[in-house]
Length: 467
Figure (cartoon, rainbow, N blue to C red):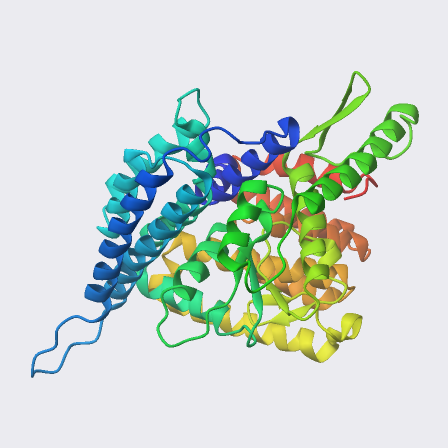
């Protein structure tokens, strides 16, 4: 069993990059102004050339010449490759639009990156993206411009990485399982890399189907990303502005400071600062960083986004539990509807049982399918999704459904520590502490290299501290 740092960081790389970027935004509040409005004439000319190339490329991909013989249908591999090329052409055009808007000169490596995407050249894709990502956070003169164009490039690389990691037919099945569960006009909010980038790829390359608004919950605290999705969808939906970001940040800071001062002034009381939350007071000012801090602000911004768009419905595939979204949620296939008009009445015993019927069937199909059962990416992804349902049911006191969801998550992927700790916590809460301990003991036995880390985590989450 691979080590925790490998299993999480390797497969959720994009999420970690966004969180790091958001944390830097929170700590330093950098406002990028360099290179704006320079080179606009050259950009416009270059953009026009690339738009023409992209249009020709999409026409070639979607309208291949047909002879008198019957054209063979696409294989899953051909479909996925075509979609990635098409998606790359779309995002390249958007990148050039943003460059013109901000007055940023297109770096040669950006053009080379998109050329590699459209050629389905994984070696070239990773080389160019890695180089660009290092340079954007360096002292390179082009760094400011690269940061302003980062969002569409990251989204494109994320899609390419999923295409590389998933069996083609399973990638298509997974993406359609999410998109087909959405109601007409519904906004989809992705969380994990698979749950964000695969639906985005399919949503934007599916012919003759509804195009949904697709965003991610993990990057709302990043102003660059907020501006990017406003660029994509600003004519359809109300986005988040600087005032929304400032308010979310400040209300979190105020709350974090109160909890920090409580722990400092009352050391014998249960701790209120959460594990993974880095809070400091320096020269009278509160400084925050870390994944927990960023996701707290993202959660506040997500709720503000929903509040600003009362006529829309929203579905979410979560990365981290966002408990505030559970009060008006109910299962929607493999994901959730999170602002159901029925409010707290949206979840019923019937809908909870229906959800578990869905996951029993899905788990059986995965186990019986040699392709899925041998794809670590598929197993981890589905395990994470059913674990999220377990968290939701636990929050809403549907203990039987929660327990079954956690056990199915561990069945799909025995290394899912979130499922192990969630199940242990649920059993302890229901007076079955010994059984909960056995769950952790078994997890440690199966995953000896990471077990001690999570036993420590178990102790922390059961100390009485607020999660």
